[in-house]
Length: 302
Ligand SMILES: C[S@@+](CC[C@H](N)C(=O)[O-])C[C@H]1O[C@@H](n2cnc3c(N)ncnc32)[C@H](O)[C@@H]1O
Image (tube, rainbow, N blue to C red; front, side, top):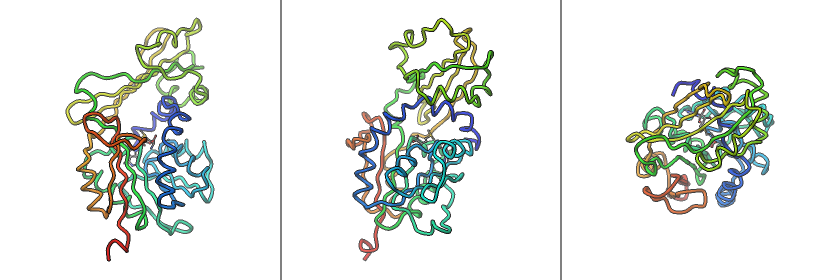
């Protein structure tokens, strides 16, 4: 993935996710693990627009949110501000994490979630990223990885998962206007049009007499062999003209591979789950592939 690939997708990404619902679903998982290890300092190495980091900060934790995309970090900073307990950094997850000033201490937990690790260009980068996450956490701390379980998807055409109508205030919206228009962004963030599954209520959701400046945005996924692709489309509702199209490839990661990288980096106990409810991971059935790996502590080593 090129460095800037996700920059244009910041609005799409924010719009397509029902954040209150998603965070409510994931919160018990994080509370469980953070309480288990007594976590006070967290690093999210691909934080996107910073919503997990901001939630942890609200819990009173000290958080660093890092991301390769300057646009994502700019949005996180704009959304949530910055203080001595909430830092935003532009950095790739395979890069060493700097400990400076107040942040000399290592972290209690390092996260790479929301399928971010699978966006690495190759498995060598995944291996390096896992090593950097382990280097960042203290002995006894945890590394959390969450990716889509690519193997659940049939090999074949795109499965359109989400569809949203948004308002454009530009008479002829362009891809650039879509990516940068703050009025659009306000509508997206206000979440006025709930995401619907294509084929179930799409017509209802898109019915609008005043559709001249409306834009339909869609997100889907598909698999081709061992590669996944997240597809984003934006089209004018007035004339059906395609305004923006983007296909983001991702790796199909496997649990034994992640386990090996974690062990090589210093993991003691490694747990795999198939979702945030901590159901066991099953390659044929699970929606997600999640790993929680505990870093070996000095008492384990002796
Ligand atoms: C699908 S978003 C997920 C963001 C967030 N963690 C979540 O759970 O919603 C993927 C993020 O990974 C970031 N990313 C992709 N490659 C990266 C890399 N090599 N290092 C750090 N971040 C990266 C993208 O910029 C994007 O913000």
